[in-house]
Image 1: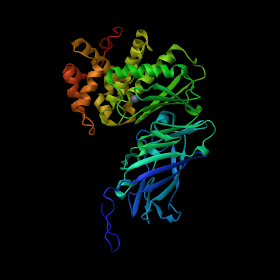
Image 2: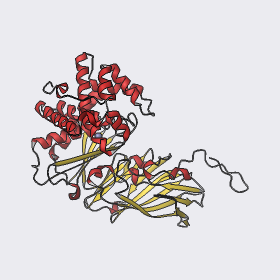
Image 3: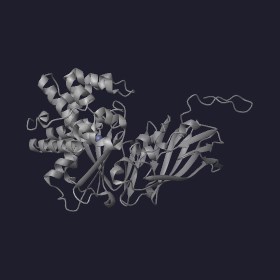
Image 4: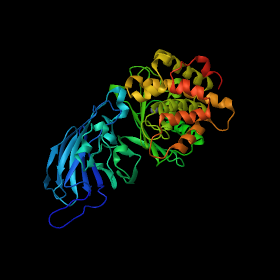
Length: 464
Ligand SMILES: [Zn+2]
């Protein structure tokens, strides 16, 4: 975009992407953020905040006290421009500063892992709903927060004020930490996640670029987290290669009392780019370290680690949540089995449990994976996981019988990557075609595209 200013003719820089520096101070109940904006939109900047697409609306963070000024401190005009959107009159050719407060609450139990959260002993900042975005057109802030796009930025840094952190707290993130509490990103930080609290770092596997940060309050199978994660990551790397992209971090945070289950164990995970946010909590009657809890953690960690390859709702699979979730369930269980975290009997038992859940949700009547994936509704989500997993089990059994070389999962991954151009998510037709080339097209038609009933014998429990 070019603009004429005054008598002389000034072209704005050909690349209007701003350089953003976010300075974050922890305050009571949230964070105070000052963003120094160099370059970028002017004379008017449209500011929009986003929201987690899976976060159950904006229940966990509130943005307010939005002001703007020059670096020297002269105020700039700010006006609301819709939901979590503002217009700033950038009456300066220099860098300027946007300030705001983000109050971080506690999301409901079902979406605790999907949005920013805080309790007395931690704060998790999910980038998509915390960091201001800067646009040069009003149209860019007109969509609802959840649908706002990310703008391009030339560079971004996020610095946390160490003085404001309680004693013993550290800042954890996957981004490059250039100096203590100062992180550099090569894109807008919206896809990042940061956790603040008493976390301790562990190397999982340096050659795979994987670290963990475990909150001191985590108490579900704690002594196994590092070894399980290492074994699972290595099993998966032997099938799929090194996880693509930059180094990744697993962030383990205990569910606070308000969302902890009264009995049993609840675990929940979410991948935000290279950060795996992992939560768990156990009811008071659950023995800290029994076999079932350990097995459950193994499958959970296997599922979440697989999202470093095939994340939810991101390229490769965007319209195909069954492909990310059903496959992750299948890999979670099979890699826990390969890593000997899960016994053969344990694997069978948990598959049988999955089959029970499939019948409970109506089995074939619940519909096809494709419908569930495309409807986008919360009510069909369980189908993506459970039917998805059972279908993957059957497809991989088919593949094994065909005697072709390689593992079903490894070969499917390679074929998907071969068709994926790095930008456009693969369409359902492409995935059906790839699968039909690997196993019987009739099976793909019945189970993947259609809603054919899955029977217990097809799962061949006891076979491996
Ligand atoms: Zn998942």
